[in-house]
Length: 585
Image (cartoon, rainbow, N blue to C red):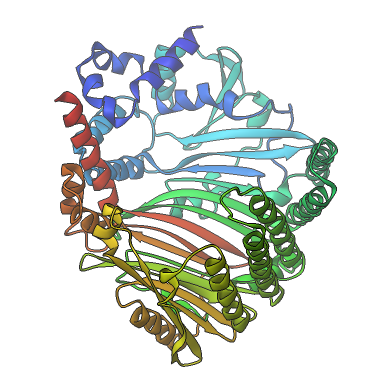
């Protein structure tokens, strides 16, 4: 009970930023030093809840990679990055507070070295050990005993702490090792950081799963349970026969892909890091496949595709999207099945839509949707998925453009003409008079233009878009585009030209959002003080106002990174402070 109260007390002291002011003024802070555990004690108390019950066996087998490793950067690195992040967020006092409190309980620890956890699977049981670098083990022991109770010497250099369950601690060289079985503390590595690989160099906090270090029997057992759950779900499926068949096909293909992944994946890595020089923080997710496996070949093929639409990566845009990938085999089949499900779902929506004026319009709508889905399916069958989009906010004007590879761009043009017929049947009149098919041509792209009037009662839309919206659709033998806004035709030509000039291997996925451009544009239309303040705060961001997602090919795999610029952290701080001020008022 005493240990549980201590854990709750520790958690209560680390509330979010918005509670920092209250926390600073409470008597709790005054007793923080007495109540906080040392980092070693935190490991000791937390490990039983992180690790599953372990076998009383060797913690590792010679030459075997761990099934799981967790890497935690040194205290010096962590506290330095906390100072940087809290300063960027406009709350340097919070970083100072954390550093001050940390200084009270890192005594005896080597703050220049990382710590971590490694878990092996012996038989069917996980065997886990945590480690932390120490400069004075006796001082660490003394702090643990002052905080949570006496450590019992059980021989062999092992100390035992009895709380809700037993925890064992052993010093070896410059390290303290922690587990919930004394047997796990035999045959300890001289340098446990070697098990971390490059995690410590890349991340403040990193987790890596060695898929092949999980016994094959366990992986297959897990797969069998997943399949069993799928079969039970399908048996309880109440959908009609056609829909059930589509869902079952899609589900079985997903299971096959998952089974292939469990058999041929090598490592899965998740990590959080800080790059102070570049002014950003980031989260990575990466997967690698076994060398020479079908999965490795598939990933290499998918991530090496050449892009014909890199013109969408416009540095002056408020937001951009770009994607390119090769699809084959099971992935292609799975995408086609998903499109079949989409077609079925769309058909149901059309049949149940009471706003459709008559059966002829309903029939035309169904034909249009079916044809467009068929074009998408034919595009998937080509084995290439490539395209992008962008939003530009300039001179109080909005511009949008999107486009990509299609199997038959001329078929898209035919369907657009059917769509016009559908609109006429639905009662549209004057709105269609501005439509001009093949109004112009740029390279091999036919340009079709029309204008959409913005209703007078749509005040907000008119403020942003004006009294009319210019739209241009481009169709080429194997491409289709759509753009709207002022000078949309020129924007479309720019993307076509820039794409043609840069036929290179593109990233699997690239998304970038510039919050500075978005807020600056929003502040020109709104008089909200918080919006204006945030926009002003990003005026000198120098490119650090962006949030991005980037997929990158790595050796035998792919990595996806989410990046947040330091100016975005400042934006969050500004918003928090203004909201707090408004609440106080």
